[in-house]
Length: 186
Length: 186
DNA sequence: CACAACTCAATTGTGCACAACTAAATGGCC
DNA sequence: GGCCATTTAGTTGTGCACAATTGAGTTGTG
Image 1 (cartoon, rainbow over the protein chains, first blue to last red):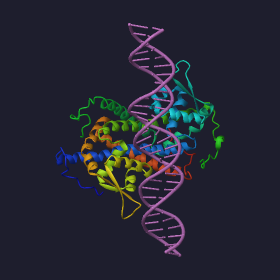
Image 2: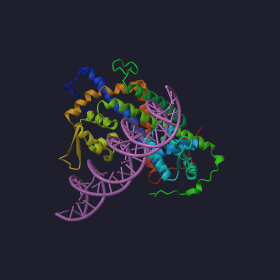
Image 3: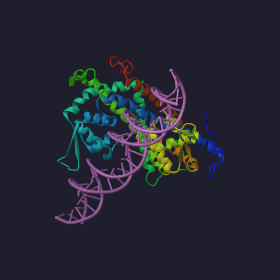
């Protein structure tokens, strides 16, 4: 690669240039790991897009349908908890699913704040056609089942750690930039 | 738009509901793996959002800046190749970066179709502040460097496989739905 | 009962991803 | 030169993610 020269004597560097190279390396690494994740996510999305097109679903809509097929009927709140999505995302998405005739939304009579989402007959029967999807996706990954499960476990652990960290970062930032002992480079 | 209409139509789904248990299991599994990936991606995104807020960058904007910090100056096309993004995504994003004073866009005089993206002084100096980002992200994951690299490698392999599969799925679908030997369940 | 605090869904606004299209510039070809 | 396929950015439209806000409904407390 025609890697550009280090801008050695940059203006406001509080960091000695000798130490900057380690940071530079870290920056380059960051480009690779964060890029890898978003690229994988989008690649997955792309395959789902192709496979789900014949069902008339987008990938997030498919996720919603999977939860509904499993649980039958849920309030929007519960749906959001399962999928980590808020009403700002779910409301318009569910409206589109309703327009497609796959779900119905009804205000609960018990608690009028809550909206119950339930499958229509058409939505229920769509499951039959969706049964073919997972195999095609699994095949597309080229991973065997063990590998998929292992990756899944690793991603879940990552998600838990990231969510916990986000909570610490947001408010008063209990995070001290000083002691990077947690995940210091070896 | 249903150009790739179903060959068998509804006739291929005469599965009685009692028979479906293996496929049902697979469907539940699918919910877990695809959910895990999108959840991890969004969790990552969330941590980046918090950390990058003080730089005034979004996560995709940060990715663009990383590439520019590494390569100095690139046409939009090359930028898109590095990041797997097309002009539909990059054009407005770059406009926002330009409005923020971090980059300039100039039509190449050699080839007037091409637009050269280069860092402003402000964009260049932002790198100094960005050097702190990767450590904070790495710490947030709770993973050590080895684990990060391994995950990266796995995600890259996944991405390559998915991209290849997407290419096969889209046109004539060279895919054989019959023999699922590739990733058969145990 | 009255009232504050909370819950839930919806809405608004910003930004990203991608498909489909447009428009300008380029380069090969006769 | 004139013609045409290709390349390159940009635009439009749809859908998702998320922050912030709104507003109706509910609950706890005095």
